[in-house]
Amino acid sequence: MIRSFNEMHLSAPMLDAIARAGYTTPTPIQARAIGIALEGRDLIGCAQTGTGKTAAFAIPIIERLCASRPGAGARALVLAPTRELALQIAEHFAMLGGARGLRTVTLIGGEPMGPQLAGLARRPDVIVATPGRLFDHIERRSATLSSVRIVVLDEADRMLDMGFAPQVERILAVTPLDRQTLCFSATMPEAVERLVRRHLSRPERVEVGTVAKPVAAVTQRLYATDSHEKMPLLLQLLGEERGQTLVFTRTKHRADRLARAVAAAGHRVTRLHADRTMSQRREALDGFRAGRYRILVATDIAARGIDVPEIAHVVNFDLPHTPEDYIHRIGRTARAEATGQATSFAVPEERDQLRAIERHLGHPVPRN
Picture 1 (spheres, rainbow, N blue to C red):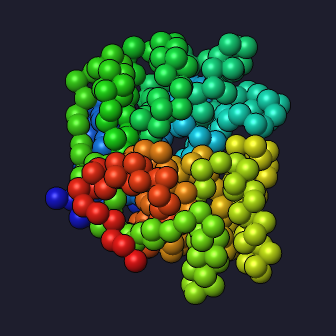
Picture 2 (tube, rainbow, N blue to C red; picture 1 turned 120 degrees about the vertical axis):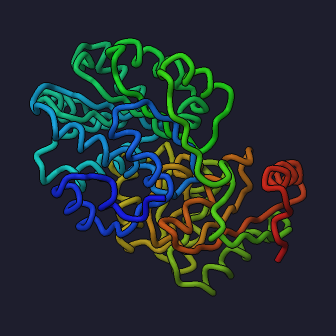
């Protein structure tokens, strides 16, 4: 088992970048995936959320791109399901490859085309994109993928859940057949398996831990309550604790209403959902990450789009519709081998969702 980045035959500039980023030892998915990706082989990486998958593909991609001729146009493409996740991936590439002159452009919806067109005109080495916006650029011929040699499908299961399968298929169809393809996913449903069989060539499969189970460092608890008791209970919890807290609600309207109530109780709070503009979403996420807001109220748009190591507590104000969404919500805490707490409120009308979650976990969520 690889226990150090020094054992991976990485370049000195990459080892320096890894050290500056604060990475000390490889996570299990990094230890097993980086070497395979460095060799140019196709890869399916399955691991629990919060285990370092982004660096597991960013490190080998940067190494391979920096070892070949720069300035040839986009040579790597990373597809992600949400704008927030795409921005975080781009930050990883800037952090690990920026000092070596690696150019990255981020193509996401909700932002003006002008800066994206300018970024594409500078012939970036890496495109990080959501499928819908990239497909828009392909349609208008502002983005060409003929020079792409590495494609990453990040959070592939979520991408297909969100209805991006047609765009993903069309995007892959216009990339070279001799590309390397890396597929990372927390779960491997049948739709992802079909995609993999069509578009990956003899992929190596790396599975770390029990896929689609929460990391052991998350302490779970459940309050069986009534709808009218949820808000007082939440305010009580927020008053008793001081750490960064992420609160998930079912709808955008509910997130707005909840954020107003939490602010009225004197807490520094912001909100994140699809009806907010991209600049508002970025300000909310940046403010939460920087500590200007202690509480972020969000819909499931954020379940796989937040990478804030200091989140101490995730609260499911409303239970999610699927066990997989429960796993990804509570995976926002206890990241990077830290510990964290996940609290869920369950009303009688949500007993079917709770039953499905507990079946998926293989045990009851501990009652408080």
